[in-house]
Amino acid sequence: MKLLLVSLQLLMVCALAQSWETLGHCKFINTADGVRIHRLDKGTGPAILFVPGWTMPAEIWEDEIVCFAKDHHVVAMDPRSQGRSSARNEGHYPAARARDIKAVVDELKLAPVVLVGWSLGAPEVVAYVEQFGTQTVQAIVLVEIGLTGGRSAKIGSMSLTPVSRPVRCSTAGRGSESTPSRRTGFAEVSARPQVA
Image 1 (cartoon, rainbow, N blue to C red):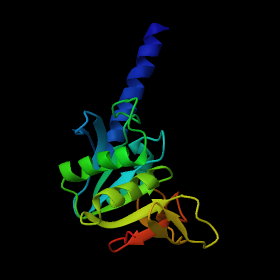
Image 2 (image 1 turned 90 degrees about the vertical axis):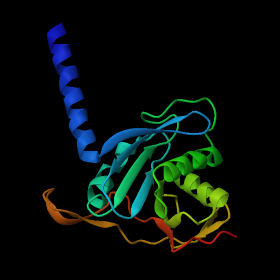
Image 3 (image 1 turned 30 degrees about the vertical axis):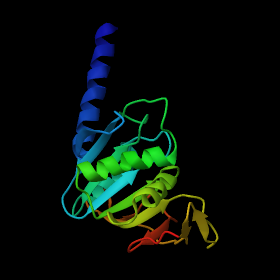
């Protein structure tokens, strides 16, 4: 029984290692307040930084990492207390987590970067723009933030308009030529978002 358990654990570790290789390099960045931020890093070219929703790890962006790393420098991060990043009792609000995003952008020299925030990662991306401006930002994409029916909304000081344009990506070798992202119907602000 013990041998079977050890074999299963080894099999799981090998599967995870293979998955990490597919998703990119697994590395860490230390923030000014001592939080160790885990990130996946793959590809070269214009930078895209993916920020997942609450409790989700960087690996949630697997399809997007594989797709965009063909011609972009793609980074997906585990926000503080998520995934393999340091667990903390403080700093779980958009302004602090925006500083963590800034640490990743600065450390990896990602500017100009496309910031993609999903669910509760979206207010963190907005907080980044509010705190640090748009000098390092090429565009922002806010995924599944609850904008429906073509209505505009405000998050922080940013006015957002929903678009229903799915992200399309070549998935050669994965079953089809072009497949929309799992997450569609996002709000997008591009070409230097304006902050009131």
